[in-house]
Length: 258
Image 1 (cartoon, rainbow, N blue to C red):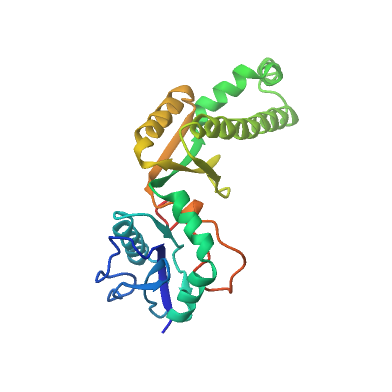
Image 2 (image 1 turned 90 degrees about the vertical axis):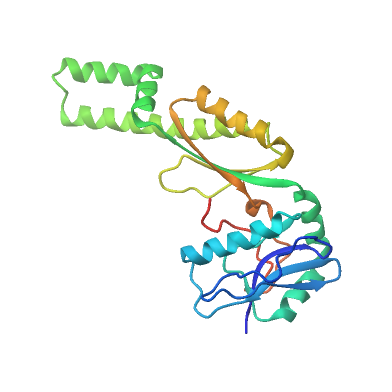
């Protein structure tokens, strides 16, 4: 049977969750595979596994339990190896990479920040900051609303200004929060968000980071800022050199909680 991989830790990790249940229905028992100085938190992989809420939460719960006792490199949901020997083989082959990542991420968590414009507020700002847009709007008003082309031109000008402001505000938000973080990972663009950024934060500095988020909200009230965390540092588990497709070491990713 295939082997499902939740995460990688040091073999000396004091709190790996042996005996608990993981993905699957009924939950597959979680077990530990060790290879030298490393260990993988695994279970059997159920047939036809899909990213259903129950299994996403089970994946997250195993990582949370394991992470409570020490650093664990979280694997993305659905990381499946052909068998146990493949997992221990990857641990052996990529041992130095994983040990370096464990050292780098020890005592650190991830906070994911997403931001979007408050529409009415950002339109007000765009009008206030752009004389050309104000002039076109006034010309349209004096012309009784303006022609179709005039209205289209104004709409295009506003849309372009808002788009430019999205990029500026995303960069400003990242700058404001980077000072309170150890590392930054910019996520893929997603519909409805002008910023999708993950920050690696020392657990002992979490309050400082959260305070920086609140200050950013005050400084940029035209932004809706959503924070998710603390999370296992999915965005900072950089994969090692190319490995066979489908092995345990495919790198970290969001399990749907972010």
